[in-house]
Image (cartoon, rainbow, N blue to C red; front, side, top):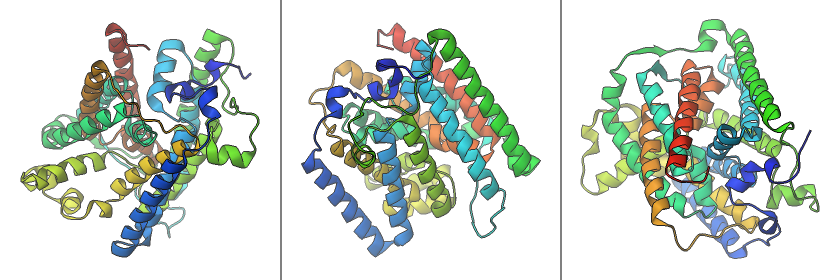
Length: 411
């Protein structure tokens, strides 16, 4: 049964949405700015790199629009469930994971041999365990995650620029220390698809994710006696097209949008959606421009990281998709009339955002990805490290929420 009022929309509260902001007119100037920036970036990439990268940029835009219009955040949803057992956002995420398993597993299992794709794999070991746990704490301190930081920055939340800046700092630090962390005990990369076959692995994954969904649903019903709606919004006087363009979207629209653009990412990029490699790359390029020889670090000395460090940032798929997410969210927020950067940021928020950002960046590098590249992509790929990330990351969020409360922050 759906419920009315604020409880139904914790994701909208997280992004600062209310009935007044939903009725605002589009910010024409910022719509034009975001559109011009997208057009310019697409033109440069089409001229210098190729059409595939332009398509990936537009895929990132689609992800940004979906995230912003549906306010599809992990941090607020996990906090709402931990503190108040409001499980709507968590249930939406689990449904997204399950849909991706149904579609991704046959593709990764080579049912369609013409599609050349690779899974997101990470080792099952101390590095992922510690990294995801630190990332979870950082989510609550920085008030964002991998995807959440990007779409809230694009949406005009200036405090999240602080989180993003220190996210980059933490990512670079993580690349410096990663060799030591990966030397700690681990049992290697374990693919459920390789070990069980895609059918059995998919069935097992769906049973486990479905069990979590039922658990979240049970705990939500026990606390509130009702379930938050995945299909409703407070806006009833707009047509389908108007809501699609101007928002807000119900959770289920966010699920559909993120699934479609995640699938396009898998097909176009040849691997699942990822976010945080770009942050380390941006930091490394900044340090290189300042005269630091980053190629002396083992992480940047070979393989794709070494090539990415030498090439234009627009040649890196993760970077251009991240730019697309930011600009897509900026476009969506402007269309919704919600692009309104704060003029002042309290020092307390700046400090928490800085600490959170460092934990986010450092943890993501150790965990071989954030909540998207490590957990979501790992689960959608049948990698066991995705489950380790989920358990450790959620545990870190529990600790992060407790620490926020001890520091007097609103939970």
